[in-house]
Image (cartoon, rainbow over all chains, first blue to last red; front, side, top):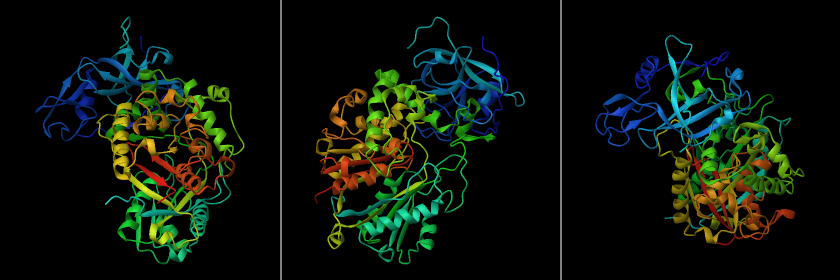
Length: 148
Length: 391
C-alpha cells in the first residue's frame, strides 16, 4: 500500500476562490472537479468562465477518482528543490473516467517508478499535505486492471 | 498582402558561443549584432528598427540587463543605435517570432533596416533548478508533485508519443547522432568536432524519463542576430539576399489542461503549419532544407508531422533513412541544431538557413533553394518562415 513520502518539502499552497473547493474536497478525501452548471462540462484546473458555453456558474462534482495514465515521466535527478529525497519519482497525468481529455496530475505511489506507463489503470489515493488539514490527491495502480 | 519575397534577410551572425564564456552577455549581444550589421554591408547608423525576445533563458534567472538578458533598451543605448524608429519586444517565442514582427514592420514601412537578435546566458552552477516556495494558479496542481522542472514538463508529451506510436530511444538515436555529426562540421557550434555514437546517446543519464541529458540542448553563452530590409533595398547592398517567402508567428494553447499534451501540441503546431503554407504560397514538396527547433530532441518529429512531410505518427520512422541527412532530399538541422550548437532559441535554425541559401556553409554546404525555419513551442510562442534563395 502507498505510504506517505517522508523528507520532502512541498510548496505552501495558496488556494484561490477558484481552486478552494478542490482542496476542501481533497481534505475530506474526495476528488472533486469543477463542473459547469450550464453545460455540465468538467474543467481542470478550475476556470472562471466555461470555455464551452461561457457560463460562469459552477459546482464541484465528486468523481470516482479512477482513470488511466495519459502521459508520465520519471524524475531521475534532484532538479526540484524540496523533492530531493523523493528522487526517483513518477509524475502521472491521469485521464479521468468521467470525461475524455479531463486530466489530473499526481505522483504514482505504492509501486516502483518503472510501473508508470501510459495506459495503466489507476485510482486516487490521498496523502497528508503537511499544511493544516490539506490532503493531496495521488494515484496508485489498480491491481489486476487491464491497461487501456 | 502576404510578404512573398518583398522582404529579405541581408545579414547574419553569431557571437562567440561557449558553455561559460569570459564575457558578459551584453558584450556577446554587441558582438553578434555588430557582426550581423557588418555582414549586411551596413553600419549601426543605418539600423532604424530592432526586435527581440528578451526573457532570461532559465528558471530563477536574475534580471540584470547585459548580464542575464539583453533588452532592446540595452542595445539602443550601448551599441548605440541612434536612429531607431521602431522597436519590439515579444513576450513569448524565440528569435524567429521576433523576426516575423520585424519582417512585417519592414514591409509596412515602419523601418528600413531591422536588427533581430536572441541572447542566451548560461551562468555557472546548476541550470534550471526549480525552487517553488509558494504556489497559486495552475502551479497548485503541479508543484505539489515535484512537477516544476522544465525537462519533466516537456517529457510528458513525448511519453505519450512513444506509447501511442511505438517510438523508442533507438529511433531517436538516428537523429541525435546525425545532428551531432552536422555540428561537428560547424565551427560556430559548441559541439564542433565532437560527434557521438548511438551508444553514447543510449547510455546518457536520464533527467526526466523519457528525456536524457542528450535529449536536452545544452545551456550556453551566446547570441545570434540577423538584419532584414526590403527586397528593393537589398539590391543596393553588397550581399546575397535571402528572401522571406512567407512567415507566421503563432503559439497558443487551445486545450485547457494542467500540463502540455501531445494532442495539444499537434493541434497548435498544425494550425501554425497550415497558416505558414497559406502565407508562403508553397507546400512541403517545395522545401529542400529543413531547420526545425530541437530544444528537446523529439520536437522535430512532431513538426515533421505537423508540416506534412510525413503522416502523423510516422516521423520516427521517416528519419531513419538518408532523406533527412546532408545530401538527402530534406537535410534537417545541418547546423547541428540546438542540440549541437547549444541552447540559443532558434538561431541555429535561422542563421543556418540564411547561410545555406547563400552558399556559405563550407564542408557542410547542401544543395538547397527553399528552406523551412521553425523555432519555438507551438504552445508558448513560435515563429516559422519559408526562406528562398531566388526572388
